[in-house]
Image 1 (cartoon, helix red, strand yellow):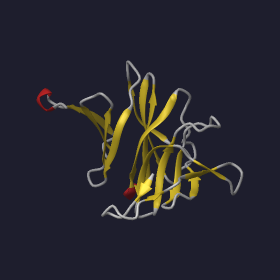
Image 2 (image 1 turned 180 degrees about the horizontal axis):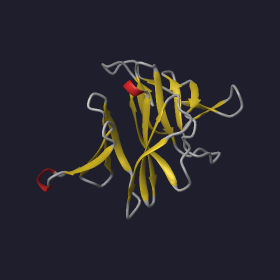
Image 3 (image 1 turned 90 degrees about the vertical axis):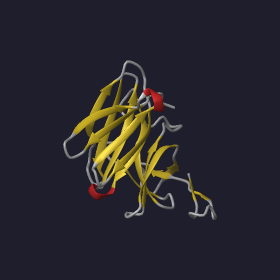
Image 4 (image 1 turned 180 degrees about the vertical axis):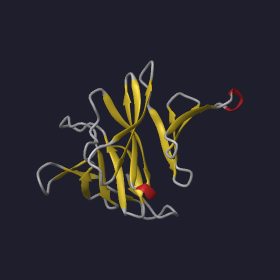
Length: 173
Protein backbone atom coordinates (compact mmCIF):
# COMPACT_ATOMS: atom_id res chain seq x y z
CA UNK A 1 0.00 0.00 0.00
CA UNK A 2 1.34 3.45 -0.91
CA UNK A 3 0.28 6.93 0.16
CA UNK A 4 1.08 10.19 -1.62
CA UNK A 5 0.09 13.84 -1.80
CA UNK A 6 -2.87 14.57 -4.06
CA UNK A 7 -0.50 15.87 -6.75
CA UNK A 8 1.34 12.52 -6.72
CA UNK A 9 4.45 13.72 -4.92
CA UNK A 10 5.97 12.22 -1.79
CA UNK A 11 4.88 8.63 -2.53
CA UNK A 12 5.62 6.46 0.50
CA UNK A 13 5.21 2.72 1.03
CA UNK A 14 3.03 1.94 4.06
CA UNK A 15 3.66 -1.41 5.70
CA UNK A 16 0.53 -2.69 7.38
CA UNK A 17 1.09 -4.72 10.52
CA UNK A 18 -1.39 -6.69 12.52
CA UNK A 19 -1.06 -7.61 16.17
CA UNK A 20 -0.22 -11.16 17.26
CA UNK A 21 -1.59 -12.82 20.43
CA UNK A 22 1.69 -12.11 22.25
CA UNK A 23 1.42 -8.58 23.65
CA UNK A 24 3.63 -6.07 21.87
CA UNK A 25 4.32 -8.30 18.86
CA UNK A 26 3.08 -7.88 15.31
CA UNK A 27 3.73 -9.12 11.79
CA UNK A 28 3.48 -7.49 8.38
CA UNK A 29 0.21 -8.44 6.73
CA UNK A 30 -0.77 -9.59 3.27
CA UNK A 31 -3.39 -7.04 2.21
CA UNK A 32 -6.47 -8.28 0.31
CA UNK A 33 -8.50 -5.03 0.48
CA UNK A 34 -8.67 -1.85 2.56
CA UNK A 35 -10.88 1.09 3.51
CA UNK A 36 -10.05 4.41 5.16
CA UNK A 37 -11.59 5.96 8.24
CA UNK A 38 -10.32 9.50 7.67
CA UNK A 39 -12.02 11.02 10.72
CA UNK A 40 -10.67 8.28 12.99
CA UNK A 41 -7.21 8.32 11.34
CA UNK A 42 -7.40 4.57 10.72
CA UNK A 43 -6.91 2.06 7.92
CA UNK A 44 -9.22 -0.94 8.06
CA UNK A 45 -7.94 -3.82 6.00
CA UNK A 46 -8.63 -7.44 5.18
CA UNK A 47 -5.73 -9.85 5.28
CA UNK A 48 -5.08 -12.79 3.06
CA UNK A 49 -4.03 -16.10 4.57
CA UNK A 50 -0.51 -15.58 5.89
CA UNK A 51 2.41 -17.97 5.89
CA UNK A 52 1.46 -19.22 9.36
CA UNK A 53 -1.89 -20.42 7.96
CA UNK A 54 -3.88 -18.03 10.15
CA UNK A 55 -7.44 -17.35 9.04
CA UNK A 56 -7.95 -14.07 7.16
CA UNK A 57 -9.06 -11.27 9.51
CA UNK A 58 -10.13 -7.63 9.49
CA UNK A 59 -7.40 -5.46 11.02
CA UNK A 60 -7.30 -1.85 12.19
CA UNK A 61 -4.07 0.16 11.89
CA UNK A 62 -3.22 3.82 12.24
CA UNK A 63 -2.50 5.79 9.06
CA UNK A 64 1.21 4.92 9.33
CA UNK A 65 0.38 1.19 9.35
CA UNK A 66 1.11 0.58 13.03
CA UNK A 67 -1.12 -2.11 14.53
CA UNK A 68 -4.07 -1.14 16.66
CA UNK A 69 -6.20 -4.29 16.78
CA UNK A 70 -7.65 -7.28 15.01
CA UNK A 71 -11.42 -6.94 14.74
CA UNK A 72 -12.82 -9.58 17.16
CA UNK A 73 -14.73 -12.41 15.50
CA UNK A 74 -13.73 -11.40 11.97
CA UNK A 75 -11.87 -14.60 11.05
CA UNK A 76 -13.07 -16.12 7.79
CA UNK A 77 -15.00 -19.36 8.28
CA UNK A 78 -13.62 -22.53 6.69
CA UNK A 79 -14.04 -22.43 2.91
CA UNK A 80 -14.27 -18.63 2.73
CA UNK A 81 -11.74 -15.90 1.97
CA UNK A 82 -11.92 -12.14 2.45
CA UNK A 83 -12.98 -9.93 -0.42
CA UNK A 84 -13.75 -6.24 -0.63
CA UNK A 85 -14.14 -4.03 2.44
CA UNK A 86 -15.96 -0.72 3.05
CA UNK A 87 -16.36 1.57 6.06
CA UNK A 88 -19.50 3.51 7.01
CA UNK A 89 -18.15 6.34 9.18
CA UNK A 90 -21.43 7.68 10.65
CA UNK A 91 -22.22 4.30 12.23
CA UNK A 92 -18.57 3.23 12.78
CA UNK A 93 -19.41 0.02 10.89
CA UNK A 94 -17.09 -1.99 8.69
CA UNK A 95 -18.60 -4.11 5.91
CA UNK A 96 -16.75 -6.92 4.18
CA UNK A 97 -17.26 -9.83 1.84
CA UNK A 98 -16.59 -13.50 2.53
CA UNK A 99 -16.15 -15.31 -0.82
CA UNK A 100 -16.95 -19.03 -0.76
CA UNK A 101 -17.38 -21.78 -3.32
CA UNK A 102 -21.15 -22.03 -2.85
CA UNK A 103 -22.05 -18.60 -1.45
CA UNK A 104 -20.95 -15.02 -1.04
CA UNK A 105 -21.58 -13.53 2.39
CA UNK A 106 -21.81 -9.84 3.16
CA UNK A 107 -20.80 -9.18 6.78
CA UNK A 108 -20.90 -6.11 9.03
CA UNK A 109 -19.49 -5.22 12.41
CA UNK A 110 -19.27 -2.04 14.43
CA UNK A 111 -15.70 -1.20 15.40
CA UNK A 112 -16.40 -1.70 19.12
CA UNK A 113 -18.50 -4.88 18.73
CA UNK A 114 -17.28 -8.35 19.68
CA UNK A 115 -18.66 -10.24 16.67
CA UNK A 116 -19.89 -9.61 13.13
CA UNK A 117 -23.41 -9.99 11.78
CA UNK A 118 -24.42 -11.60 8.51
CA UNK A 119 -26.11 -8.98 6.32
CA UNK A 120 -27.02 -11.21 3.39
CA UNK A 121 -25.89 -14.54 1.94
CA UNK A 122 -26.06 -14.94 -1.81
CA UNK A 123 -26.00 -18.58 -2.92
CA UNK A 124 -23.90 -19.04 -6.06
CA UNK A 125 -23.79 -22.00 -8.44
CA UNK A 126 -20.02 -21.51 -8.69
CA UNK A 127 -17.29 -19.66 -6.86
CA UNK A 128 -17.76 -15.91 -7.33
CA UNK A 129 -15.62 -13.05 -6.12
CA UNK A 130 -16.84 -9.56 -5.24
CA UNK A 131 -14.72 -7.14 -7.25
CA UNK A 132 -15.45 -3.87 -5.54
CA UNK A 133 -17.68 -2.48 -2.83
CA UNK A 134 -18.55 1.02 -1.62
CA UNK A 135 -20.86 2.70 0.88
CA UNK A 136 -23.12 5.66 0.19
CA UNK A 137 -23.06 7.20 3.71
CA UNK A 138 -25.86 9.67 2.98
CA UNK A 139 -28.25 7.25 1.30
CA UNK A 140 -27.15 4.42 3.64
CA UNK A 141 -26.76 1.99 0.74
CA UNK A 142 -23.94 -0.51 0.21
CA UNK A 143 -23.10 -1.34 -3.43
CA UNK A 144 -20.99 -4.20 -4.82
CA UNK A 145 -20.22 -5.98 -8.09
CA UNK A 146 -19.18 -9.57 -8.71
CA UNK A 147 -16.24 -10.33 -11.03
CA UNK A 148 -17.47 -11.31 -14.51
CA UNK A 149 -20.95 -9.91 -13.91
CA UNK A 150 -22.77 -6.88 -15.26
CA UNK A 151 -24.97 -6.75 -12.19
CA UNK A 152 -24.71 -4.09 -9.51
CA UNK A 153 -25.95 -5.31 -6.13
CA UNK A 154 -27.26 -2.97 -3.45
CA UNK A 155 -28.10 -3.34 0.22
CA UNK A 156 -30.33 -0.69 1.80
CA UNK A 157 -29.13 -0.38 5.41
CA UNK A 158 -32.29 1.34 6.62
CA UNK A 159 -34.78 -1.17 5.16
CA UNK A 160 -32.35 -4.11 5.45
CA UNK A 161 -33.14 -5.26 1.94
CA UNK A 162 -30.98 -6.37 -0.99
CA UNK A 163 -31.62 -5.77 -4.68
CA UNK A 164 -29.83 -6.18 -8.01
CA UNK A 165 -29.66 -4.15 -11.20
CA UNK A 166 -28.27 -5.70 -14.39
CA UNK A 167 -26.73 -3.35 -16.95
CA UNK A 168 -28.55 -3.28 -20.30
CA UNK A 169 -26.77 -5.22 -23.08
CA UNK A 170 -26.10 -1.98 -25.01
CA UNK A 171 -23.83 -0.55 -22.28
CA UNK A 172 -22.09 -3.69 -21.05
CA UNK A 173 -18.34 -3.56 -21.20
